[in-house]
Image 1: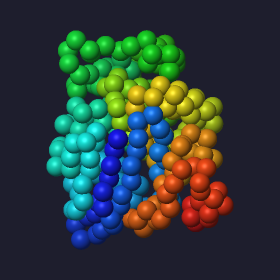
Image 2 (image 1 turned 90 degrees about the vertical axis):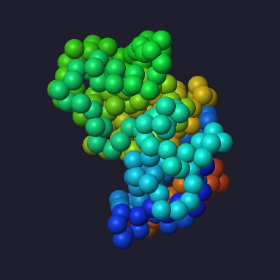
Image 3 (image 1 turned 30 degrees about the horizontal axis):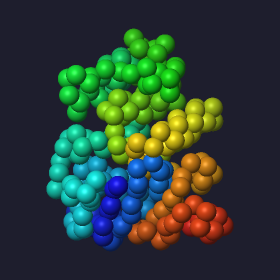
Length: 231
């Protein structure tokens, strides 16, 4: 289980997170919702090690990883699909997938059939450069690259942003399948409540660097959640 405990995060003198706490459990999707600029991506950067916290702790599977660099967290099974995808545009699809091998023992460095079962379009594009793919195909590639790492915690930052509806449905289907496997925790950042509602067991809402609402999906009032997401 992931446990974020009373985390503060600063960018210089500006505070992005104030005493934030949340949990994400294996076998569940935890969805982090909020308007733009409320600290969602900053929280993911704290969890993955991309930015140090000013106070508080981050615990993964009972180990305090607060001071570990990003590559050590990746070795412990934490995979991050950042907003904007960050694929390598000049590398082929296969080469992009193989960058996920870095954290695996040599004997486990292979792209499994499951990757192509989840994202069949990628199998037909292995020799194409990542930059030649559509936005939706690049998003699928970014998620597949993270799954190559065999993560126990999959962190997804707004995977539906700028994606056509048919691909959004495919991504939702993949997340549901991964949840059903029961061997990883999924932390999903979203702005769209409808997408989150269909996938998440637990919903967390942020505003101005704070957690303002959290609970099991069935416990929360949908109208209250939507109100907190409206501009």
